[in-house]
Length: 64
Image (cartoon, rainbow, N blue to C red; front, top):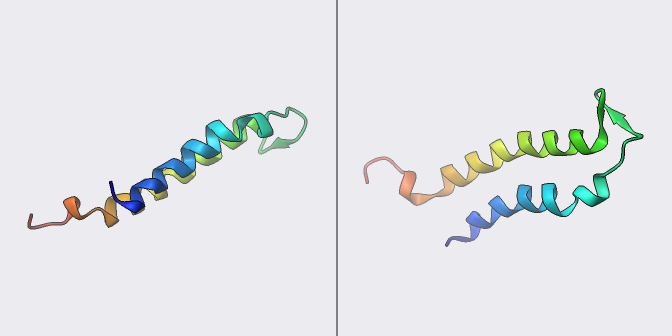
């Protein structure tokens, strides 16, 4: 396992680890309760993180 594979833990920790911190209804962000916004935000942020992992992984290079 390469060190950049640990980048995949960032969204996992953010969504599951900090959901108890984000579990609030009062602050609405973009019309959503804060917890729903938190999960949607990290789902969107996960896409570039996974793209970075894909680009850094040597098994995805052309001409294997």
